[in-house]
Image (cartoon, rainbow, N blue to C red; front, top):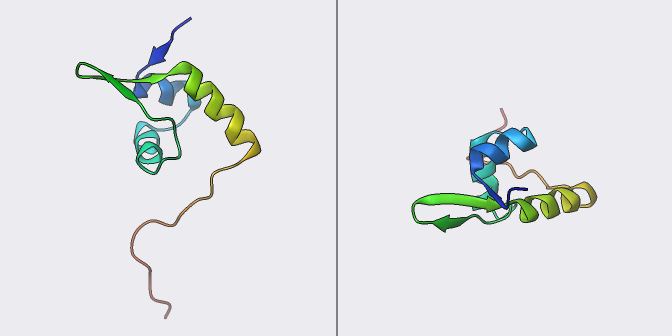
Length: 71
């Protein structure tokens, strides 16, 4: 069993886009990656734990960007 995976491998496994995962990492909504030299890796155990937690505590969507004026 693999202990770590790349963001691309995680995006394939979770059916999420790489950009979405990177955004979620920066917002603190996804497990933090670690570096081995220049390589960025995610722990498989952290991702599995995140999946279990997300089932019971869904992520609230935050509106991004500037607010629009109602006309």
